[in-house]
Length: 314
Length: 289
Image 1 (cartoon, rainbow over the protein chains, first blue to last red):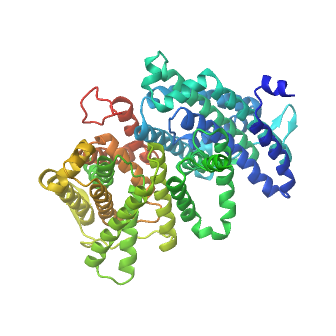
Image 2: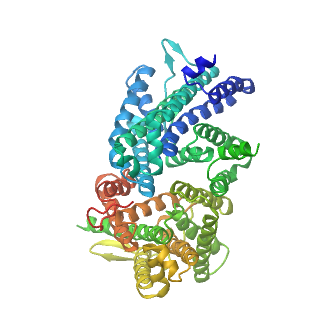
C-alpha cells in the first residue's frame, strides 16, 4: 500500500480530501445543497489553477473570471449553435483558450506587480464587454441557455453524477498540481516568485515558464467554466465579469497563496459565504468587503497559516 | 464638423473626470507605492454624500465643502487601515484596496440606497453654443474646476514645501526621511488629497451622468487607465491620459459603436502597457520594475 502510494506520489492530504469529498454527499439532503457543493468544487478547480500562477509563479491575474466564463461560452456556443458534442466542444474551447493564453502571455507577463494586475484587468473587462455585446452569439446581457451534458451517450441529469464528475476532476487536478509543484519545473516556478533575475542568471528561460504556467491556469479555469456552464444549463456575462475575477483571486489569497490546499479551502469558504449571508441580504457586499479587508490585515498569509501556527504550538 | 466638435466637447468633459481620478491614483502611488483600487469609490462617495446632504436640507455650499471633507476623511480612514496591514507584498495590497472598494460600495448601499440619483446643475440648466455644438454650463464647470485643480496641484508640487516633500518621498523615501520628512504625514496627506480630488469630480459629474452606489467601478478603472496611459510616475501625465481616453471614447461612441465605447479606455491602456509600459510620455527603453 505504502509503496503504491509512494510510486504514484499519493499524499495523505489527497487521501483526506478524497475521504471528505466522499462523505459530503451524506450532508447534502437536497438538490440545492448539491448545487452549492458542485459550484464549490468547480471554484476550487479554478482557484487551484490560479494559485499555481499567483502563489507559485508570483504572477497576479485579475482576468481568470473572464477566462473561465469565456471558456464556458465557447463550449456552450459550439454545442448550442453548431451542434457539436459536449465533450468535443469542451476540447475545442480549451484549445482556443490555450492559444489565447499563449498569445497573451508574452506581452502581459513581461509586466510586473501593479502593471500586470492592470493589464490582466483590462483583458478581463474587454472580454466581458464583448460577451455583453455580441448578442447574436452570446445572448447579450441576458445570457444564454446551455444544452445538457452527455458523455458517450449518457446524459448527466442527476445531481450526484455532477458531484462525482466535479469531485473526480478536482482530485485529479490536485494530484497533477502536487506533482507539478514537486517537479523541477515547480522549483523553477517558485524561484520566479522570489526573484526573476536569479533563475534567469543560471540560464532559465523565465518567459517560457511564466507562459507555461499561465496557459495551464487559464486552461484549468476554462475547463471548470465549461463544465459549470453545462451543469447549470445557463451562462451569463456576470460569470465572466470583473467581480467574478476578484472573487477568484480572493479565494486564493483567503486560503493562502502558494498553498495547494489553501486554494481549495478559500474556494469552499467563499462559495458558502453568500449562502450564509442570505439573511443579511442588504449587508452582503459590505460584509464581503469587510472580510477581505480583515483577512488581508490580520492574516495576510491566508487561513492555512492558522493551521501552521497551531501545528507549531502542538 | 459640428458633430465632430460636439463629440470632442463630450469627450473633454468626461476626460477631465478621468483625469481627476487618474491624478488621485498617481498621487497615492507616488507617495506610498500603493495602487488604490478604491479611487473610483471616492468619486461615488463625493456624489452620493452630496446628494444626501442636499436632500437633508443643507444648503449647497456647506454641503459641497462637507462632502469633500467627508470623502477626504474616508481617505484618511483607508490609510489608517492600510497602515495596519502587516504584510505589504504588492498582491496583498492590491487585494486590500479591492476590499476597500467592495466595502465602500456595500456601505453606500446600506447608508444611502441603490437608486440612481442626480443633482441640480450648479449654474442652472443653461448652455453655450460653440460652432453649433452645445456645451452645458455644468460641463463647462467640470472643465474649469478640473483646470483649476490641475493648476493648484502643479503649484502645490512645485512651489510649496509640503508638495516638494511629497515629490521627494516618491523619488527616494529613505533619503526623504533622513531629511526630516515624516513619511506617515505624507502618506495620510496623499490619501486625503486623492480622495478630495476624486470627490470634486464626483460632485461635478453627478448632474451630467447621475450617480449610484456602483458608479465608482467603471470611473475608477478608467481613471486608472488614464493614469497608466499618461505614466504612473507623473500626476500631470494622468491629465493628458484622461483627456485622450475621454476624447477617443466619445469619438468611438459617436462614429463607430456606442456598445464598445467602454472598451476603448482599456484597449488603449493595453497598447500602452505592451509597447510603452512607462506611459505615453516616458523616454523610450525605460522599464518600470
